[in-house]
Length: 308
Image (cartoon, rainbow, N blue to C red; front, side, top):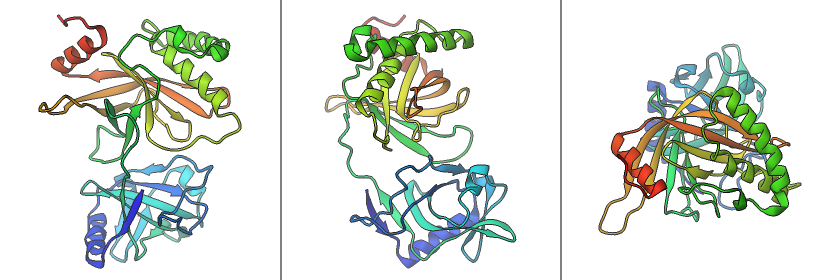
């Protein structure tokens, strides 16, 4: 990531924007207040997933102090620690680093003189298909995460058992038996094919990354069809709640001169599936709203049949 500090005038505009309200933020503890070689302050290697604080839980004073009203319990664990505060201003990601303080009025964050703009470095992930997952569909918020296909996973084709490395098929089978039983109990099993990439991911990642800490980053996409999409990542990086609805934008680049096709849906988490050490998680999401023409597009892409 590249980081650019705001000018004084830009900071004043952003401060007024925060004071006016309706701005959700995320708070992440950091282990070191010294910037790295790119000027960015890194989160702790074992950092928890960024804690989202809704707009209604924030009050910003004219003095440049953010008061957290009725903050989540996990925020209280980081009093007197240095935290990174992120938010969006006109769709531009911004952040600052400050101390989370306990005051007579509750928890507070003093907005420092330095607020920085974050620009994402170009992704090296596959770009033939991508998605953006938004963390709320009921509030005006820009909290979102990029999603890219996991390497060597075929998204729009029915998964088969032979996709899984032979060396981990025994472990994958144990996962599958457990997950199928859970999905049937909750009534979300369907034909079960969406669980094949799930057990493959958990078994292979657990073997490949033994002894290593999972990394943060965009979510992996393991599977897509006309009914569901499956996401995966480290358990610290993926916190989609079962039964919760999210907004999703899917992008399909098309040959020139055609424009990129975008599909907008909402989806609900049917279930989360973890490995034995709870280092990796996969989330199976089912579409809850989709336009008929988009459903037709996905159906024909997955089946090579005409939608009727």
